[in-house]
Length: 192
Image (cartoon, rainbow, N blue to C red; front, side):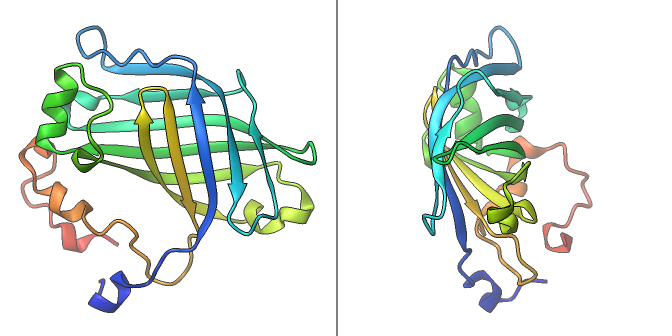
């Protein structure tokens, strides 16, 4: 159970990523699935110990089931550090739209304004060089902002044993009408 103090613990940002997509055919009239390949981008750790580029063509992006106000988002891509090291990255998460965001999406507007969605999940890195061992052991909580249909800004935060809730407003959306898939006896405060 979270207390008021828990919500004030600032998350520790580990990594900032700017990701470009080659194409993003998110059109609700055609399909409930959006597929795109990774077109490139850049990244930097907040402590500036490593940075580099995202390899174009070495990744994919999937967004499904956004019609009901909830979308499952998956990404895979490869980071290339400034030392030439390759790091595989996987992201799994959810995009939750407000009722207005859902309506806008159904009208063909993507991305909706930032105030009309939250996209959060977790990143996991693989094949991390030994000099960056702490990133290999980390499951990073992530928040994604769609800057445009083809560009994403990703902020990755440390997952720790301390109670951290970097996005406290998600509970207010659980009770929104667009998320009627939840069981009627669902209690958001019972989440662990």
